[in-house]
View 1: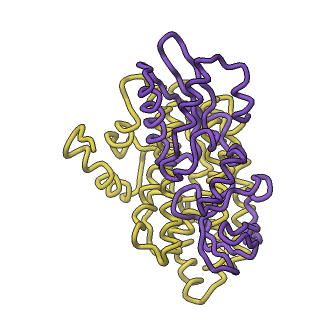
View 2 (view 1 turned 90 degrees about the vertical axis):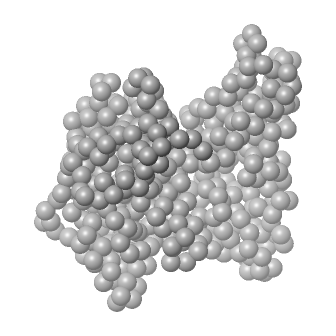
View 3 (view 1 turned 30 degrees about the vertical axis):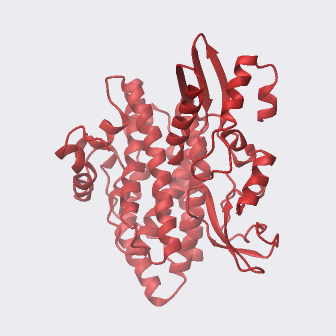
Length: 245
Length: 172
């Protein structure tokens, strides 16, 4: 049970850290100042969640690990993040769509975790859920604005769906540690699909059918993107071990 | 939970700590003390050790580490040798815990205080902008420029009457 709890907590930590890192690449490059600030605010929220999860995982491991060693010194195969969140930013539409798919999933997951028997996971989820609600609202409004916008923005959203939909199947495929923790992804899948379909309808975007789904991230089998992220994220601690500000 | 209730039945020694805490301010919103913010849960004195239990405002708020350090410093300066600040998540902090005095100070500082949480924290899309009162001219004719502002706790608004942009301490 403890092993599953540690692995599950690391999965949640890695997923939020990697998406935070990805979004932060927009800092100073957003399409307009307010949206640059919005995406980096979301990065900060996700980083805060990641810290809470890493601190908890470090306490559970009780082997001298810290939130920093877990983020900076684990290898690619040890990371358990979702494939979706490691994908490249692409254009603004692709970044928005990745955020929407994830935030909609995270909101439903945190609603479930609020009731979880593990009190610390429940507390972290309860703390983060209001932030996640803001993320869902912001990203889904953007999906609609772009999908039902100009021909250019609509086509870019079609491209974004093409790039990202194949990574959404994994969200609902339970890893061993999720099953052991009693996470019910089937009910989340149903609600997620309803919500996404409603937003896509309003955005005049098609919901893809029968797409081959990629998975593996939860088990540490990643796309090539993760290596590049970790190279950048972990550079300082790898090059100057133990360096402090 | 509010601070007035917490003060009841605390010993004189704990009262002393509470009064020290009333001088510790939020580094990002320096008109608010940690008591105005409602983030101090409990003060405990065990032998020579003082423990202050606080709760974070926002998950990613970068000010929390500094607030914890400032609490340790302020209490230590008054002669307490061992000061521990413990952060607990549950129950989760909400903007409803900001005191009335704190809300008034925010307004005086030029930041619109949060509306009550239950009115606005929902995931409805393109919901009508909540009516936020301009802290400068008191007009309710304002509009939201961005849900996300200069810090994690704020949204950016502009007044349609006096035209001033202003921060809104968003509901949480």
